[in-house]
Image (tube, rainbow, N blue to C red):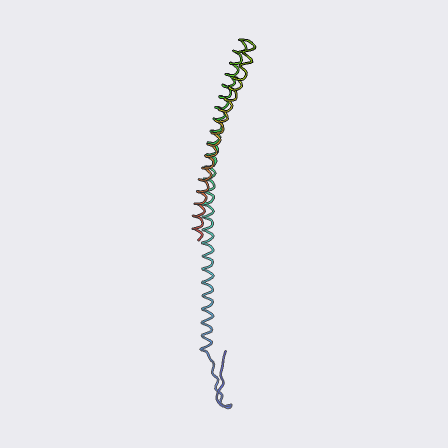
Length: 171
């Protein structure tokens, strides 16, 4: 409290500066109100960010489930391709070996010279059958790898989209 004493010693006049005191009181109340408003705004912001983060996390979990299904389907398809190729390759090998065995058997019945002459063509039959079988399996492997790669790319797109949507929510 500011005060001013004036007048004579026998008749002093005391004046208080209540205007400044009222101004200070108003400023204090105003500061308290502003602080309270800022506190409530910060709390609301924090709640909004928390809810947005929860929603973003939910989007990412859904994307993870979706991508897991995509990858599992691709792996299953790739396995089917490779299994079918193995069966086909085994059949080609078996037919090649059977043809080579038949050639050798027929040559053996014609004599030792024919049998000896038939060994090289029989070997070539087996090699050609193996080469064809390996080609079948290689082609199947590249198809299944491509299928898995495409699924991974699609999975990455789904995750990126979910992350982008989540980031927009948080902003």
